[in-house]
Image 1 (cartoon, rainbow, N blue to C red):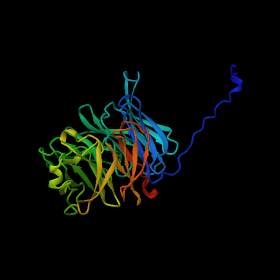
Image 2: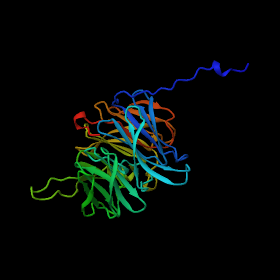
Image 3: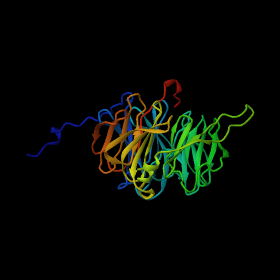
Image 4: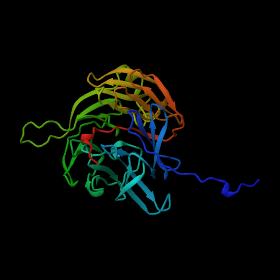
Amino acid sequence: MPVLAEDLQPEDFTVRSLPAPGPHWFWANDISFTRMNDGRAYLFDGDTGQMLGQISAGFGHALLQTSPSGHEIYVPETYYSRGSRGERTDVLSIYDGVNLAPVGEVILPNKRYGGLSLEAQMPLSDDGKFALLYFFTPAQSVGVVDLTTRKFVGEIETPGCALVFPFAPRRFAMLCADNALLVAELDDAGAGKVVGRTEPLFTEADPVVDKAVRRGGLWYFFSMDGKVHEVEMAPKPKSRKAGAPLPRVVNQWSLTTAEEAKAGWRSGGFQPYAVHEAGNRLYVLMLQGTRDNRKDPAGEVWVYDLAKRQKVQTIKLTEPTITLAVSQDARAQVFTGPGVSTNAHVYDAATGAHVHAIPDVGPYITLIQPVTVRAPEQAKP
């Protein structure tokens, strides 16, 4: 029998609000290789495996950042007027952190770097006031957005230097082609200037990769063959009259012993490194291979005590992966994304035990970002 339209009850659409973030929430960023104009960020609860929400983020989505208060989420996005072609628009979209609804946007110059996901593509300044966007056309520069006024306030030319590693309230470093670090700073209005450039800190024979991680005032840069360079970004000046010193390498050590290196052990995947701040631990995806397959899925996580600079734990993964992150609470969890399947996985950081799989997250998760919110008294936007 035909169904009459009046017999069908219209569906009521509702909007659900997110509760306060749990300690094991994380974002899984989907670059969407097979549908590049439809990038997405998925929000998961690591405890339950439930997907809590989604942000659609346009062409070649890479990452997002959250305001210190957690009230806003910032996503660099690119759109074309004809979907995959036509007039290009780059924008920093601002989403409500509770309903994941768009609440504002800042139009950017059409220069946003498009490539595999790196948090150094767009970090926030340490005080949370500015978004720092790496531009690549292939000319290199940094665009600055004031997150309080929601305005694009300027651009700093940084030829030959890439990505953005923030420190101090308003300073940041960039990795240069000659293995030096360039340092720039912003004033209260967001106007930037280059204040110095170090001597080369790394070597051509064993160059560092573009996936540095941070613990406080130290940034850790990793070479292709497993050397760790601890870089102090803001050394104390020798006197009150002296200007702020430039970054310097304060320690160098290796992820592997001589025997492990001979056996071919090295870091692997797209997002191989993560730091647990309070535990002073470094987590690294490891595989056996050569420089040529260093981005392949890795089957183990090696855990290092950063004070002793020694390996203290090995976590054997349920399946190899290309992405790794760790929550920052006292009962930390390790999150790994898809590598050889479409599943994500959660592990107990203390014991290495597999907690559970999160099925069908997707095959193109290239960056996982745990949700962290700073103390309310430090919150800005």
